[in-house]
Figure 1: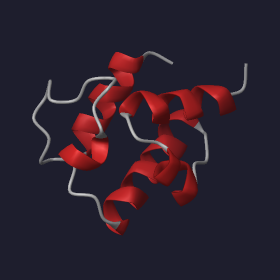
Figure 2: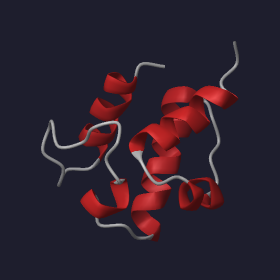
Figure 3: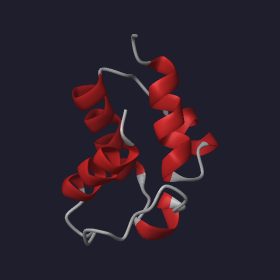
Figure 4: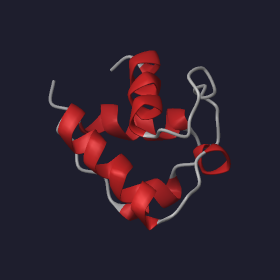
Amino acid sequence: MDIDTFIKRIEEEFDDLKPGVLKPGTRFREVVEWNSINALILIAMIKTEYDVTLTADDLIQSKTINDISSRITSRMEP
């Protein structure tokens, strides 16, 4: 999975994000208004785009965009 494409998908999903704001090391909870609805939006987008299921605990344990990307990559079918 390409991190730049992943970041672009997140930026498309959240209307409040301006393109180019997110970087791999960005702490996403500091950029996105973090609440249960936005967590569900992100989980649903990941399931739809990458066919990977992340849990709320996965998101809690992930601090940066790169952390989430790594979790997705580790669960993708080869």
